[in-house]
Amino acid sequence: MLWSKIQHFAQAHPNEIAIIGDKDYSWQQLELKVNQLAQQLAPFKNQVVALYEDNSPAWIIIDLACRLSQVVLLPLPMFFSQQQLEHAIKQAGVSAIIYAKDNTLTKFTEFTFDEDSMDIAGLILSSLILPDVALAENTAKITFTSGSTGQPKGVCLSNEQQINVADALLDAIDLGATRHLSILPFSTLLENIGGIYAPLLSGGSVIALSQQALGFNGSSGFDLTQLTATITEYQPQSMILLPELMQALLGAMKQGWQAPDSLRFIALGGSKVSPVLLQQAQDLGLPVFEGYGLSECGSVVSLNTPKDRQLGSIGKVLKHISVSIEDDEIVVSGNTFLGYISDVDSCLQEKVYTGDLGFFDEQNFLHINGRKKNLIISSFGRNINPEWVESELLASGLLKYAVLYGDAKPYCIAIIQPRNKSVDDEKIQANIDVINQGLPSYAQIIKWQRVSSDMTLDNGLITSNGRPIRKNIYQQYQTSIENLYKGE
Image 1 (cartoon, rainbow, N blue to C red):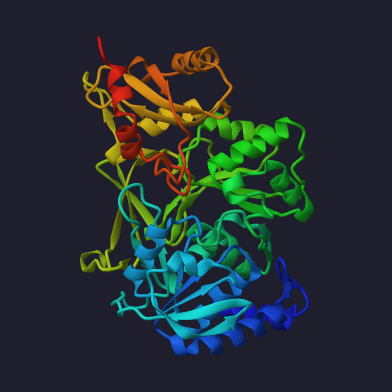
Image 2 (cartoon, rainbow, N blue to C red):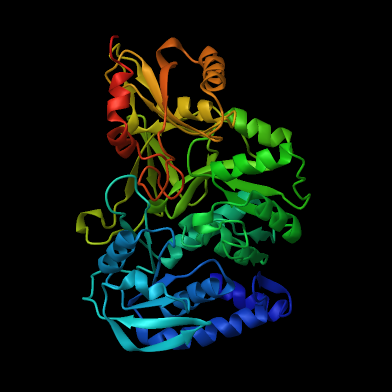
């Protein structure tokens, strides 16, 4: 369906721009380039080829060429550690890696490369010598979850499953042809499907800029001014954000930045967001709509839209799947993944048990309460969803991270990281006092502790999409946490 759409647009609107980046591509040029690359990739039919590259038009072209030539694509996140990269490559039985012409191979020193290599859209393709791995039938893409514990799992998806999600998104949002600015990495399944496939299916365009051009400068940090300047320059109609990025844009608007009038839809996902924060975005004119999804369902499951929206919910279920609630857990049926790599028991499951607690309200909006495994049961027998309390702590923007603990304890405590290191304890306590007034007594934060060093992806305390890894944080701050309960 996607390729036939591209062919149609190439004939009907040959000179209109489909991809914008370091080099722009019209629909006609896109069709020609994808066909050329598909022929180059033909020798790897039904084999796994990994792509290790920043966002760019080349990334999109390679993705589409793999679909056309029936090559299984493994997008490798550039934020993965070397250990995670090696794990993903071995698990998938990769036959070749496509990478930029730099020192990327230093990250893959453990592997033996074939001496032959070829140019693929300005990148290098080098063959690998690895044992074949049996994959589920019809596997077209492998996406590795960022998981909060252990090594990431390889989720196998078909081309049809991915397009089903993109088509359902277009149907729900109903924006027509849209100009989309991709901010998240393409290796993130949500951006791959919602930021590439959906805009192309709509006949719109994808703005594919490097992470540096967007203000993400690796070890040197994040340049908000660069991001806002880029948004202003390209005047996108849609974007996908994580809560941390939305918080940053809200801060920029409060400082005087004007979001472009072109913006019509900003999808928000990754973790639970406080309705207060969403209301702030709405009051400032940002068209932010919260959604929910997971890789095992091909990404998006439910979404708020301009015509169907309720703050505090994660929207209504998209047309291509169905959702039920079993023992308070969100269970998804239809369009479920083909299975995990090297896990026969996971193949062809009719249902995905998400591990998320949730419910439907009377208007059929889906709500999420938090992770089933994270549920706190106090020593008084009270059930507390930590994500709910944490979203309230983060809503003011004073804190960057907040992690609640209190299982089998008489009260809740929090490990926190302020957004600004210079903020004093009195201001933090005053903020927590205000939040506590809106919480039932059993969920109030009685004591708290600042982190001794920032929570980062590198030190294993947060996931790639900004979620705190509770187990790791507890292990690092166990003594501090237990001390907060001493004498009680």
